[in-house]
Length: 407
Image 1 (cartoon, one colour):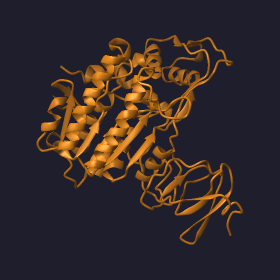
Image 2 (cartoon, one colour; image 1 turned 90 degrees about the horizontal axis):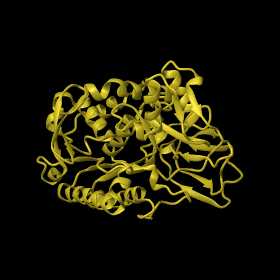
Image 3 (cartoon, rainbow, N blue to C red; image 1 turned 135 degrees about the horizontal axis):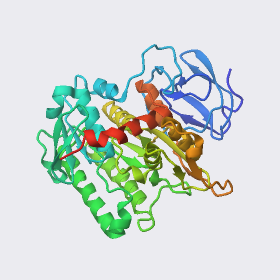
Image 4 (cartoon, rainbow, N blue to C red; image 1 turned 90 degrees about the vertical axis):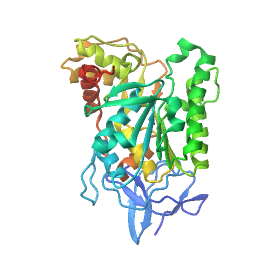
């Protein structure tokens, strides 16, 4: 048995535990040889003396070494031979931390990702959280987490002196893209580099076992490489530089580093909703419309839950997995997103205003989410469909900022 292409211009790939769902169900396979040009082919795969037929094989993502195991189920709902139920992001974190002595530091704790991380950690650890989780921001302040506790966040400069030292570091501190126009490239660069230097110093001193650094899909250039022009794209370039230096720092400290490249996310704790397509649409819908779609040409985005990204990245790090991955999610054209937002708020399509020009060059900001989907399937995490993400975001924008306001 075997495929006739095997053996012609082949490449040997050690893929342990990869999960494919490009057909009726996921597949797991062991070491196998693939022709370097394979794009769409029926391929017989042997694992443990069982032969499977893998259809529509797509080019593989960068190698991700996973422990060999049959996936519990596909993250979007397809069952496999295991009957374990889906877990929520907070359940995944609670399971990963159970029985450990991890001390977790969270930088950027007042931003979107940092606030979500604090919520998840405090819910997962319960009464043990105050002694095991420390948040950091630009200055000391008090914040309210989702379980009702008030938490004191420390200034970032104190990270290097944390005692007991963190064994896990979640690094989300970074000046957002909108600050470039306000500060200028030089000041924006200087302030972000200062943040990076502070955290690198803390890693060198504490030697955490696990480091998670939030990157961005903006590191991908339109030509297919990674951005490296600080003047033309300071945000993407500095994110690229952070990826490089934090992977090296974690390796030097003997730890692992997990880096999600975030494209579009949704969910609770959204800050500055007017800067995001989804957030601005929800704000317009909440007051009865109209929902103005400014883009004239096709615009494509992919959305997943912000809590899903945080939970999977932390789970991967605690599992000892090095990974750099694009976030996944349902790909949606912005007009269809507007229709989903309208429906979620009881509005009909007449509430949407858009001047449509299909001949304009499409704007596609979508990553290759296969690695994140594989991690979700491996961990048993349930990934929420887009309508659920829209409702979660809307609920937060309606009552969250007031309920969880900080002093």
